[in-house]
Length: 306
Length: 317
Image 1 (tube, chains in turn blue, purple):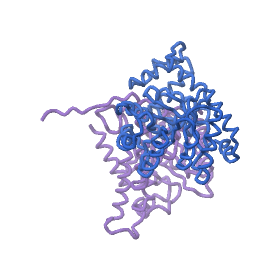
Image 2 (cartoon, rainbow over the protein chains, first blue to last red):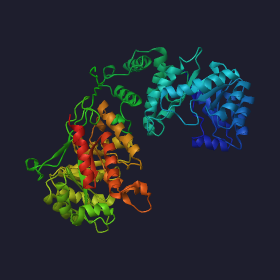
Image 3 (cartoon, rainbow over the protein chains, first blue to last red):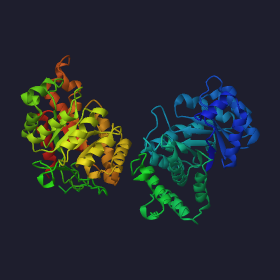
Image 4 (cartoon, rainbow over the protein chains, first blue to last red):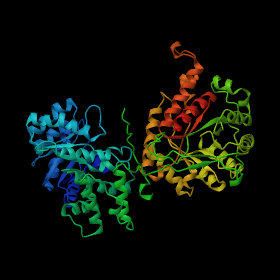
């Protein structure tokens, strides 16, 4: 799984200010910091920028690629901003993103094809995001994959995103998204790539509790076969979990538990109480977090205390 | 005809048993107590598991004559509604399992006044009592602390206990041996969270009833239904902090709905007003019972009769 660093995002007041003041040093520092921490790629979310997007995106792309040599994900709904960014990019880029709405499907994918970019395609049509995994996969099968084939976009450049929603309020979507990834990875030969916005799973969760939920969900999504995750590379513990999975490192009790979570999810099973050392608070917290992500126990802001 | 095998589902969880009211043996003065909960399956699915206690019906009475109520209700309760003690007696005679005494919002509402009314009602009926303030944080705090003292040992249910004021009301329940009605606005996460907060204060879970709120038929009932269904499914799956009986107030919700409230300017095809209003209350209530309600609070005695009839029929097996 490749990590697309998420920290250049317009929702951050610092990012917003740096865009406004055209402070390229700020972005260069944040880019280097993320890549040094292990980000394979970087997302550049500038917001809609309806008026100035076509200037801001190429300015940002040029500035960032001066200091890092990674794939950039151009994240805005402003298509002319994306196209302007693609024109100045040195490496292959990712377009983030297109939904399954007809109007967007007609105009965004041809740009990806024209500039040899990868394209994140959301399993979301006019009717919003379906709960069930099968409905989400159907949007991919009926709309997104045929679109890519029609315009000749290779499957390795189509990143289907089944949409991670928050455990706080959309809890029933959490296990369904894992299943959607699993099904997508066996849909077609070759299957499409899959992408998730990992941190969305803990949106509107109290700040201190977010990283644990992100990490546990990341392991579950990896087990389902996800290829890309837009996530926080600066979360050292997230990297620790990913490394345990990648190296199958069972040398610690934490490693054993993370691998049990991974293996059981891969086998379409769930972590059980006897996988967990109940005398170790860290393990208990991971188990409780898995239970809310399975939608077995109702999420509350106090779920770790019960 | 071959015998039909009904597929069954075994749940790992169980709804807690909660007892309302206390007899002399347990430090109260009630003629009997009412126990709800204990189910190991969804409502009325006797082939799946146990439902040791049938859902129960409370009748709502108010501390003073509710002039804003529908004339249909005022007519059927007559003079009894002018005095809470007589009203409680009348409700008991009509077959209520519980009395739900609601204090209307009034400027001169005070702890002493609430204490006096609660005493009158406790003396007039042997049924367990649920006491609700007007649902305004300050007034609820003021009167419920006095009510808790006056009803010492009676295992009253005190409401409304919500996120904004639960500390005061839970403290009063702890000090005087009562239960609380934990109310949240149709939200599974917040509902469970309030149970956790209350139990963190030391009130045992068998002294909490969960009140997920509801809407009347046509006014959000289906949303309330989904929330209750989700909470009950979680309880049966073993989510400890949701394993509490649920109380809802379909009477209050129904009689606010246009269909029950008025006969002016409505199409003739809507039919007889009284029958329509009662149907609205009964249909709302019976639906909520199917989603897991353990205590329903009603207003009309005919609705009480019909809902009890439904419960009895569904419980006999």
